[in-house]
Image (cartoon, rainbow, N blue to C red; front, side, top):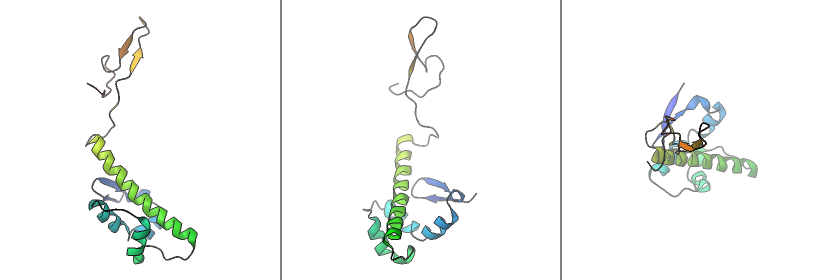
Length: 124
């Protein structure tokens, strides 16, 4: 599979993106990534106006809305991937809270991590 680094943290499998979408929005992607890296203020409509050669030309209001919304999806995907990296760091799984469960033998509550449950508990 073809993969590429997008934004500051995302490794995206480009084969997972429909070929027609890839072809249509590949030209605008570097501009969106550059703006994200510079912590610029994002406005999809401004992006379309500033880089008209990078987006499909259309006069249909519906198609213009689709282009604008697709650029927003690209932007917010980068935001989520960057924020996920800030929250989880380099870990490949999210931390799990320490969830107590009932002990069937004596009715008392015990911790999943104290009994070898393996969860990454909060507040430890």
